[in-house]
Length: 94
Image (cartoon, rainbow, N blue to C red):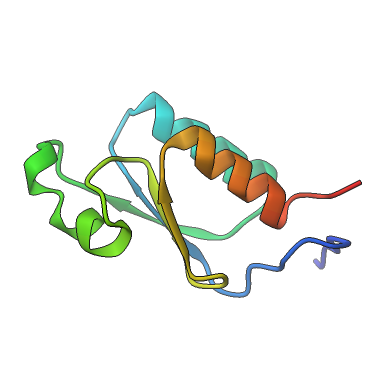
């Protein structure tokens, strides 16, 4: 099945989502990824903030949710920023 997104970028490689189990902010990003039909890999991280070295190396912060987009080179944290980025990069545009 093929979808066309007029002026949006196509995600040829899956995005990486750093997240915690049962985190409502992480789930907000997951919902948007599903709504936009974007492939992604979940990487569950340590609950202890000081032990989230993988997130720090990939995104520069230890907060989750965080994404790394190999298609655009963008890394970011904060659910509202991520959702806005996903909509602007992969969503349908009027």
